[in-house]
Each structure stands twice: as C-alpha cells, then as structure tokens.
Length: 329
Image (cartoon, rainbow, N blue to C red; front, side, top):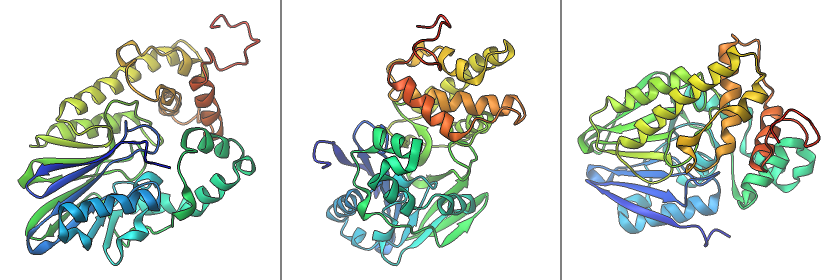
C-alpha cells in the first residue's frame, strides 16, 4: 500500500537521524532518532499507522543496533501522524506536553479507525478523512498517549546527551513542542515547521506561531527537521514566518473590509506560495485568524472549515455553490 511513497532515513551525523516520508503532504510526517552513550535512544514521533511505524523502527535498528530498544519516545503533538504508532515502542518512556495528552483523549485512534472503516457514518469528517487520507490503513493503530507530561520546558539527559523540550503552542495544535539537541546543533520541530507545504493552524493564534518561528530562529542550530517535508536549515523557518506575516496582513484587510471568513479564505492571495503543497489549508488558517481578530465572536465550526477546504481543493472559486453570482466564478 505504501511502496509507491518514497521514505528515507537521513543520517544527520553525531548519532542523529531523520526519517522523511514522501513530499510531506497529508499524513506523510517525519520522525527522528537520537542515540546517546551507553546505547540510550530517543525517538521523536511515531507515524500514522502501525505498518509505517514498524518500517521506520526497523530502518532505525539497521542503522543503529541500539535502536532495537527505544528508551524514550517524545511526541511533539497529538496528531495521529505523529502518535498512532506509539504502541510499537514497547516499554519506553513516552513524553509529551499535558495539552498533547488532553487532545489525544478528545479524538483517540479508535475514532479514526471507525471513521476510516465507515466514512459515510461520520459525516463531513469521514468524507474529509477519506478524501485526503484514504490511502492509509488505520486498522493497526492504537491509542497510547504519553505516560509523562510537562508544561513549558523539560530537560532530558539521555545517554550523556542533553535534550531540550520546549512547549511553543498553542499554534498548529494546543500542545506543540520542539526537540532541541544543542551539542549536535539540530532541532526537531514537529509541525511547528512545514517545509514545502502550507501549514495548517488548527489552534492558533497566528501570533504564537510567528513567535515560535522566532524562537527556533534564535536557536544555535544548523539543521531543522520539520514535521513535514525535507530536512533543511533555518531558511525553511524564515519562509514559514514570511507566510504567516503575509496571511495575517491579507486576512486583516479582508476582516476590516467586512468580508465574511469564508469569502476571505477564497480571496486571500498566495502568489508567493503557489509552489507549496496543500493550498486548501488557507481556509483553516483564515478561519483561525478571523476567530482571533473578532475576539472569538466569529468562531467557525470545524465541520464548516473542513467542507470549505474540500471545495477549495476541488477548484471552487468562492465559498458558495456554482450557481451563485458573486463574481468569483
């Protein structure tokens, strides 16, 4: 099922690795491995399915025999493409933010498994899951949340290496964290960085995400492992920051002009980001910014956001039906 998607282990040097999947589009997330002294290992994030996670763990073990045993697993946030394979790490300590665990409990793996098996029974969510992520087999996923949580900041010492965990959410989700390895000058960002694709702001506010970019840019690192897309340097973080400052400015213009959030989502220009994947995510991003600009008075339902994202990706020119006369067709 997944043989046609390129998946590659990248050796970052100094006992660090990145597992990079495909083009980084919907569900194709990245993971990381850190090996310390005394064969102590840390894995950053599992993947969307058990099969994909098992393939990744086997690749880690071929590169580093110590990785046959995972001592610590860090979940950067709750999304299933970073957590649904947690059950395959055995007796590892699983660490995440407190908000990560809360969000995992709100929509556990069993929900995705059921929705994938019978999309029509789950309304727009089932339709959305089938449309964007129908290629994934969710029959082998399980709900295994972190068994250690923290808020703010946590320092790990694993195999003589210092690893800094810093909570920078809410942004992509409520509980986003990054994993910084100072001695290797590497940062695993989770979905606080999308490289080559439009980010999606489920939580926001956008100001927090811009601040998160500034935090990462301020780190003494050479290598950025994003949550989706190819390994890079800080240039991908700068590009993402530019994206958010642009979307904030353009959406604010629409809001101040009195446009509804749906119209704004189809109106905001992205000429500088046409080459980025998953452009329909602009709908969710504009909806979140409208919520913040209005002080919560405009708070689009997730069902409406998902519906308009699907219309956007299908080529609709406005949020209305094709028979309308708004002038956008």
